Image 1 (cartoon, rainbow, N blue to C red):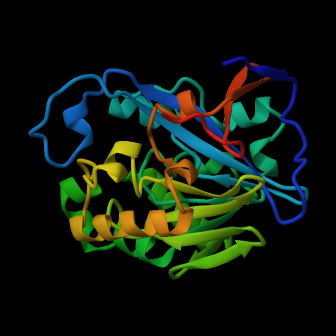
Image 2 (image 1 turned 180 degrees about the vertical axis):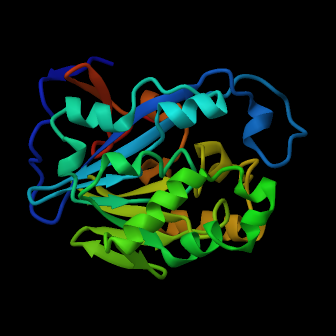
Length: 279
């Protein structure tokens, strides 16, 4: 699929109340196998790579960053190197991280809430349930705290004390055409972002469904703290989005196949506010 090349991210051309959305891949796991991506592993195996994204929602008035990814420190500690730190990629495309005013954290796992210090002036949006879980008694168990990074959580708490956090308790409208929706299961307080675009509502589901297949097969990802809640969230995903063409999963490499790309200052972005080419 041919790419369009820009020096900076183009200005939003959508009508008032509508948003442009882009996916920015900053890391990848090309060696990932099918059985690693599902809770039940009695299946034929084969390659099923995962990508790591942050998402950019823009309209004529503002830019909202959805998740902050992770950086070189966390990548080295976990053996998962980044291709580029999200903050550096944003700066290259004309969105300096210190100028980002709003960050929605879908949840506090290390690959979604890292390097918050790179966004010093952002107001951060998170669900009450997520910070309660990430700082509560469940973190006494290694298996529960594994997807969290203590430095990220501590920095988030510092931002709370700095009055830079806005907490949400369930569904809420953040801005016209952009709303938050609690979809627990993979994480206690996971929230998706529903964005109105020229092609209709698009749900940035994040890890409410890691891949298209987790959702279409009704088969949760391997890391799920509440299976029943995950399955109920799958139903809500479709209720919110309408159909699979309006769902953006958190880590599916197929996103880069289904959606066209643009290249901005050497950074490739997937354009999510246009119709995908899905089989």
